[in-house]
Image (cartoon, rainbow, N blue to C red):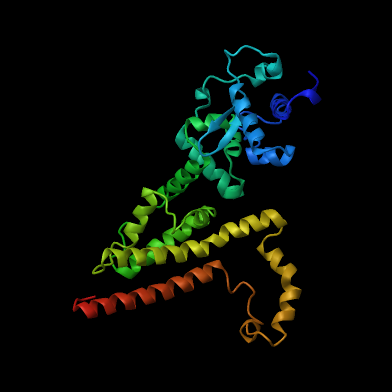
Length: 325
């Protein structure tokens, strides 16, 4: 049957199969979603759904929970159908369950951390992590269920690297400050981590929770709800300020300029604003080192003021209850 005489869904199936056979879509790669199919081929959603159903029936793709529909690895016992001849060459054959590569959940998680540290969380994908081992992305799904699970495991593993001081600070303020600085140092080592964490949709990460517990362990006389509010307020100051590390990394990758180069390129525009007389607070910065305000100074200043406020709050609560602070 001529290609033009085929029904629309069949033509799309054949085109996606061609991309798979040509290596344009490798095992583990996501194939076009139903929405993408409707946009690229201008067909109805029902047609797009039939395309993916047909591809699954023919063994070309498989659905991975939390990921989508991806190219399936060819089965060694499936014979060599004519439409998959290009995939029957030795270089394209499936390996024996990737066990020879030494993959494990821990190694996959550590590889994910390595990629995210160097390239940012946006650059992280199952395919990119698989490239660290020279395997297909499908091999990773035997150890982690999805990219979402991988990132959560990466975040919890990053917190496991925190080394608590021994002996620990006895005073509540010293303990809270030490815990905040441990988080700050962690986010500097892993710039992507601060932006991943959420205070509205927290993930179950025992190691991260253990650090927060340790940070607040010397605060006494507070009911659990108030203590949690204090802990999250402290956490959020560190996390929100540290989010700038990932922002700067992504900006440098997109523009090709580091922070100093970018500031130098903006200098003429800022100079006009500062000398206009309309912004006296900003104008007062003239003559100061341009780096006098930075992420570290913002963190230090904010942390000190936050701890000042918490100390005053704790003492007022103690006075109101007749206790001793």
